[in-house]
Length: 416
Image 1 (cartoon, rainbow, N blue to C red):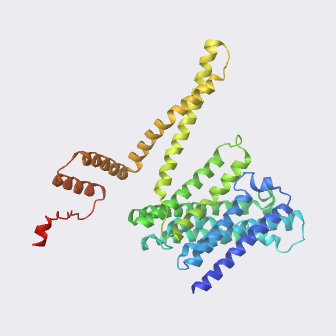
Image 2 (image 1 turned 90 degrees about the vertical axis):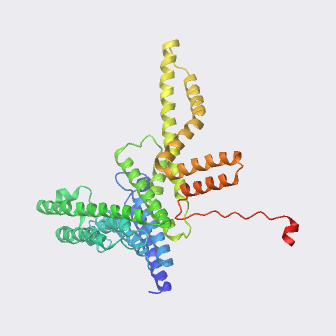
Image 3 (image 1 turned 60 degrees about the vertical axis):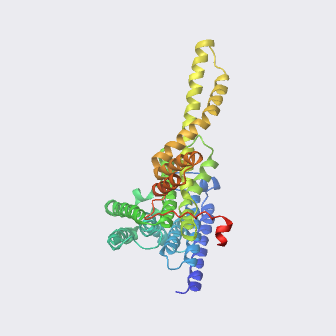
């Protein structure tokens, strides 16, 4: 396929994905949901987050596929956006055709069935094929191909067997809340549950193998590819942590707008980070981003803990001494935080450098020590030996040599 044809196909698929996202939002409003329920309610992924995922994956996929059509990552991104677009648009279409306005639209029953298995290809591509093929569109070696076959087999089992089992039950029961368990025949529910208990662990097992292959690729990679993998791994870890927090912890104390915007940014971080990693010839220095994230994340958590502990202790002390609470506890805690900020930041920065960036930390220490000796040393031979030692320990070259330009002689000697 020529680059022009690939670009035309990629952007056509992107427009289709965006049309599905817009159609799903319109149908969701027709089905009686408010904007708050679309973007803010969290009982699993919101419609807004899935729409954001569809648009971000499809746009980044079109950019990658149109610039580098030989890289499968762009087409995988487009496929993920397409499958999730079909999921949300098909489900909302079926709800409207079967429940909101029965009989108004055709194929409602068929799309109710589609919405029950189309999630599997999208999930499998994200869990298995993204980490397995990132960043060049090929597995690290032939021995990792069984991981892809296992992921593809599990996706196929879910899609085919779910369609066969639920085909006679297609209709309102598959889209009505709580309708599946009460209206579908019991043996079909048992068979479907047994199949999912077999196929879903297969997807996660293949996903685990894909993550291991990414670590293997990272160990063998050169500097540019390592930076790309760091982008992808950082965004994936951020998404996993955020989804875990939303699923386990109560965030009702935070404004819903903040939670919603954070969710939308996090769910789109994987395609954005991957697009940056693949499309840029010169990558950003993600080491600095990770370093600052570790330092200021730890620093913020520590300062918040010190602040609240200081308030509690100070209030107890004021109650014991004066018999009542005082706002001076808040003032004292604030002053304590201001006094601790810089010393604590330096200590946290030193700890992170020692634990996670040991080579750079050691190199910085060696250079600092050499700069001190450089101010005091006057012997050229000694300085040359020190310089060679510094270069060997910091840069670690295969071979190093030092050449010094000879001093010019007197002008008369040069003329002779």
